[in-house]
Amino acid sequence: GAGVSQSPSNKVTEKGKDVELRCDPISGHTALYWYRQSLGQGLEFLIYFQGNSAPDKSGLPSDRFSAERTGGSVSTLTIQRTQQEDSAVYLCASSTSGSQAVLGYTFGSGTRLTVV
Amino acid sequence: ELKVEQNPLFLSMQEGKNYTIYCNYSTTSDRLYWYRQDPGKSLESLFVLLSNGAVKQEGRLMASLDTKARLSTLHITAAVHDLSATYFCAVDPDDKIIFGKGTRLHILP
Image (cartoon, rainbow over all chains, first blue to last red; front, top):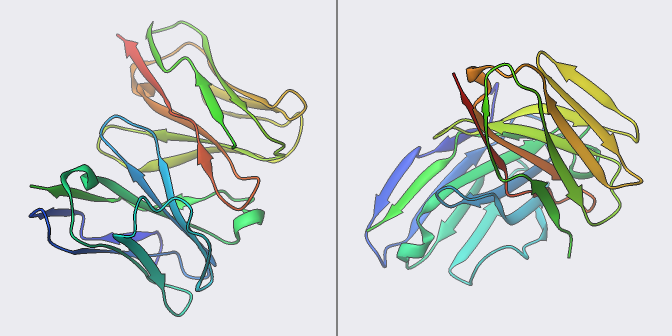
C-alpha cells in the first residue's frame, strides 16, 4: 500500500482481555517498529523487526506483550490480560532498512487502545 | 543509555516571531530526524539530516545538525498559527529510533 496501515484504529477492551493490534508496513520496507505513546507523552520504543526477526525486544514492558512478523510484512502486537496502564496509542513505523533509513521512517495512524 | 533531550518542552509564542527548538543527544549519530505531530494524529516526517553540517529548509522551518556537538536545531521564522503542533527529534544509532519527549509549540494569533 501507499502508507503504513494499522488496525483497528480504536479499540476498547475490558481489563483482563487479550488484544491484537495489526500493522501492515509499506511494501518493500524490511524494518518495522512498534511504539507506544501515552496521552501527552513522547514515544516509548517497544520492539523492532528486521525482516521476520526481532533483534531488539528490550522495550516490551512485560511478558504480557509479544509481537510477531510473518512473511517480512504484516506484524501483530499482542497484549495479554490487558491492564488499565496499557491504555495508549500504539504506533507502527516502517523503513527500507533500520540503519540505512535515509528516507526516514513512515508512521501509521496508530491504534488507540482503551482498557476499561 | 542513549538520551535525546529537547528544549524547551513547551513553547508559547506570538505569530511573526522567531524561535529555535534544541535537540541534544548523548551518543554518536550521524543522522537525525524531525517529526511533527498534530493532536490526535500520527507523526509526519519533516526533515532527515544525514551528515554533519546538514541544513534543510521547508517554508518557515529550518533544521540543522552538528554531529560533533551532538546538537540539532529547528528554527522557526515568522511563526504562523498553522505551525502549532508537537515537534519531535529522533536519532537511530543502533537500528532503534529514539525520540525526544517533544516540544509542544503553541502559536498565538
